[in-house]
Structures are given as C-alpha cells and as structure tokens.
Length: 429
Image 1 (tube, rainbow, N blue to C red):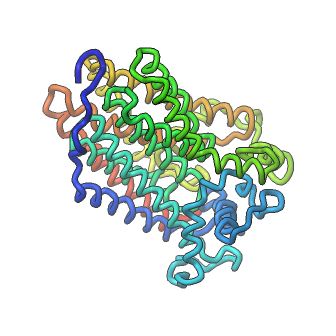
Image 2: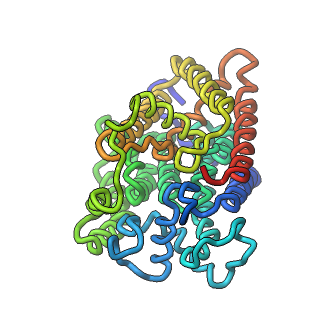
Image 3: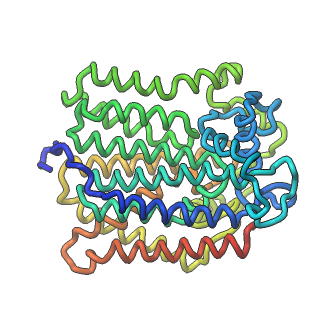
C-alpha cells in the first residue's frame, strides 16, 4: 500500500474455507447454548431478554402472512420494518413440524408463544453472517489470514453479541447488515476507492437502511468517505448512479411497503411515539440519580457483558479486564497509526466517527425519549473497536505484542464461557 493512500487491488482472501468453518462453528455453538439457556421474557419473567415476546409476535405474524401494524397488531414491533424479522419469520415456519418439548429448558408459560426457541434460530443465522463478514473484512483490509481469524474469533466470542444473537430481536439483523457494509467498505477501499466495488457498497447501504435506526450511525461516515473519493476524482458519476440504484433496489421495496401499511410512517417511529404516550411510560432522565455517571456505567458495561435488561452483569473483574484490554489495545493501535498510510488513517477516522455517532444516538435517546443506555445499540462498533484493539498492536516492535491477539482472544473465550454459565444459573435478572 503506497503513501498516497491508493492500495493495489487485494489478492484473493487468504482465509481458507476451513478457517471460516471453525469460526462459524464456534459462534453457532455458543449461540445455540445461550438460546437454550434463556427463557422467554413473558409473564412474570419479563426481564430474561429485552422485550423478546414483542419481537417474537412480530416475527410470528409475518410467518402467518399477517401485515397488520400496531395497535391492531400484537406488538409495537409490527410497525417497524419487517426486514428485521424476515429471518425469524422463516424459522417460525419450522414450528409446526419441528417443535419438541426438549427445546424448552423451562415450562412454556403460555401457548401463544409456542415455538419461540425455533424462531431464535433467525438470530443465530444472522450472528453467523456477522462473524463471517467481519472475518472476511479483516483479512481483506490487512491481507493477513491471522487478522481474519482474530476478527472472526472476537465476533464469535464477544459476550454481548453472543447474547443478542441468541434471542429474537431486531438488533441481530441490524448488526449483521452493518457487518456486511464493513466488508463491502473494506473491499471498496482496498480496491483503490474507485468505482470498483462501489456497487456492493451501495447494496450494503440499502441493507443497513432496512435495520433499526440505531444502526444508521454507520451511514454518514461511509457517505462522506465515498464523497471524498468522488471529490478527488476517483469515482465517476455513472458509478455513483449505479450504486445509488442498487441501494434503492435493496431498500426501496421494503421501505415503500412499510410506508403503505403504516399510513406513511416509513420506519414506524410515529407509531412508537404513540406507544410511548399510551401503554408504555418512558423513564425521564430527571428521575435518574446521577444520570451522567449512571449512563456511562450502564452503557460501557452493557456494551460488553451486562445482559437481560442491563440487570444481569458479568463478574466485575471480567468487566474491568475487558475495559483494560480495550484501552491498552486501542492505545497501542494509535501508536501504530502515527506511521500508517493515508488509507489506514481514513479507516481509523471512519471507525472513530461511527462510534461517536452511535454513542450520540444513545445519549440523545436517553435524554430526550427514554433513559435506556443499552450497549446493544452500539454493539457493532464495540466489536469493531475490539477487533482493532486485538489485532493492530501486533505490528509493534516488542515481542510481547505478537502474542497480544492470542491473549485477547483467550480472555474473550473466558468471558464467553462465563456468559454461558451466567445465563444457565441466573437466566432472568
């Protein structure tokens, strides 16, 4: 890669099929175990996973071919973009044939939620997509097989991502779509920031638009990067037009359909405001003691390993160690950035900007709408920062840093196992 930031087209991914099978098998195994461990948050056990019953009903209604939106539908989530639940709805079709008593670790609380373990397979599949995309993105960006294995292991083992990918929700799709955009962005940037690969990037932008608004933080920095390349004459108007058409082709039909069935409310946010004014009573920040300190504590811990509705944290020693590993790794990565080429610096600016926008989204939502500093809203960016913190220091001079990725992955393996134990022992906060 030369100093002006233009990289030669990347060679074929050095990751082997066996590598991908290993990281996906690890990810799916952990998520299957967590999915079996977590009871459905229904009835008195409302705190097992955030609002899962509502997500389950939205997916089940789609599987049954029902398109009514809230308040006619059973759940406020039925007003949101159905793309978030298409994988879950497809898995719901398996329920009549494959539902078995052993799928339920605890007795079924109500017949109306029968089949929820099978519907969770949608999140597990989306989690596999996330792991694959991030592993391929890392090896594309670095041309290093070990970087891809490190990224895949980080995504497979990351505790909060294991949890989110183990129950029915809209975040699993949002993270997976963002991971696909990261892969498309890496391929486009490494191909010279030109028209090559821009079509795939446009399609990935469309996939992100079909997720939750909490995932939209990735859009402005990506568009700015594309715009900067266009200003430097690297991209022609026709290439940008083709990418825009692909974005519309991916996102347009679903956005239009949701607008029609919601009376013009494309993302379902107007319905959500009515929901806040009616059945749900949001938590006002004025009622939260030490709001800034509480926000910081809950957001940082729930971005790594505070499960359920932020009420089931991993051991404090693991949370402190996670923060220490991240800060040391990011600090070492920044030390390498001083001598990096311009393309890598643009990548660092992109990641820092998307992360800051994600935090700003959670902060504005907590102060203006409902005090919910949920780390799952910035989960993709937390995982990306962890991948950088685990891999980038490896290039520093001292021999210790060559072992850093293995040490980091080993720590995450301990945290992932602790997550599984926690979910089995105390499934509801």
